[in-house]
Image (cartoon, rainbow, N blue to C red; front, side):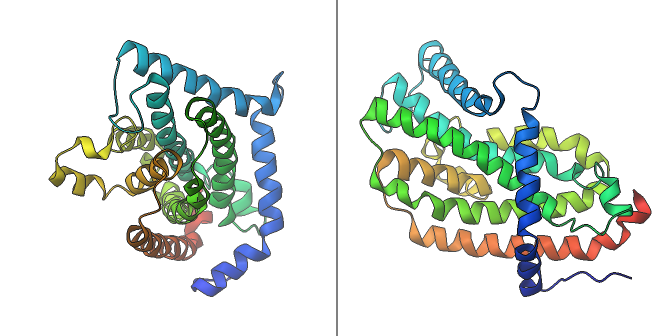
Length: 272
């Protein structure tokens, strides 16, 4: 019987040893998404550009909405909204794919000694690639409409790292549960939509009463969305105490998720 590492140091060592395979699978996932299309990888640039244009028109001209922060112009609203969408799309791509990662690759389970734990990592890296392209569009828009990006934007990786660690932990749990409970894959789309509206993507957290803001911050997306806007648009330094708590929680979810996955994977071959 094959034994799989369940201690945090062993998990980190395993992921590091498989970094080459992870990178190859990530490239295949990114390139494969656009294989056969005329524009190829350029779609990863066109899509966020189109999203930004649509948000500018719908929310700026149709709804005539205002955030009350970062200026009252239509471009300011679109930029603020798009910042939240970039963060949320990382969550959506990782979570939506997670329940099917194992069941859609039965050969990896039955016929090949394959490090299944890297599949959520591949999905996360692919999501980060598309987020990076969207971020480039966002930065260009900020420079165009606001004259430049504050230096505090350099702190953004300090938010993204714990955010991805948390998403990986959740993805490992969902990938495992998706093998045994197939209904999870059917319901995860609805759950993602709910999280979208329960996150301050289309509205600022400050728009809610204080008691509801505390509940909103239980959503793991909220802190990253709000802090991303503060760094990229507001020019504010990170909330260091909040970031420390978020990092600690993310590490706990990360290691808890991989340990859960490693312990539950023993039954994958019997179910698939």
